[in-house]
Image (cartoon, rainbow, N blue to C red):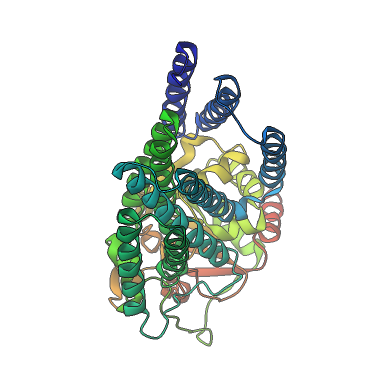
Length: 460
């Protein structure tokens, strides 16, 4: 059955919306518009299927499931905290990959052994990639949610077990293409799910965002492959866009972390991945201060740089930080925000968090732009960040973050850390900057500490 001309034109319009959505998402200023365009395009593509003359079995069940899924998605997205956004992204990505894999299994059953070589090839590819994306994303969710350890998990002979499972998956895939049989597709499904788990377990917590991006690209490829299986052009376009953008983002994130992607994915087998070690220097003396001390340092400075991190998001202190920045600016202090590419738990996490607090986008400066300014800065206020300002990334070859580009906070005249405790950062190592004589620590919840600093600053 041929697709009506009006439906083809609608498909073209939806494809353009997807492209415009990705383009708009490249800037915080237009990101909201990009989200709306993408959501509208996806909705239009879904509704279109009901009016193109395609015979749909179990129509009532389909509509009910769409309604249930829409409610779950809406409620989850509305209620999720900004700190848990990366986990939600991982979970939704896994659901997308799993859905593509299940659709391929159903199409495999419907084909009943009849189909071209390309049909079987793309069906098998969809099952593998979709299943890996699903199980891998579930593990990344558990790591980010800290339901399981964020450190690399290396099983006994894990390297060889992973290799054997990968080879077995490929062998069964070839067998299933040559001799399509239901028991082979079930075996392939199981092996792919196991491989997805083994693939992500050795990744350290600090590298999980990179893996999320990679798995997102995998989901895109699975959707594109399912587009061929279902003869759906829009799935091909959307999946290809997601796969390409996810791959590019993964590459950029790996570059921002300062090491090749292979080291991120397989470094645990050689002991070089982030989060693979942990040291403790909690007994060493540090210099701590009171909110009034910090207020005096900030209030009489000429230039202050604010460095937000995941701790800021946990404390929901973004609005208080903006209030502090505005108060300092009213006193004639030059204030900027320094944003590391992987600050928080995913790219753009800090940008979105600060935009939520109505921080002017012009004040947010990326690492390459802000690093030369630290040497001429009087005070740097670090709120909840750790690994992205840790000098060990430059000096300690044994550190799991060695080689990662960082914010040059240690070049400033004075450094103030707002921390709950002396607990190491997400990578699991201590920050030597905490013990530097020019560093002052203010312990406590970031929002409460900032509120006290603001109050003290107002009374100066």
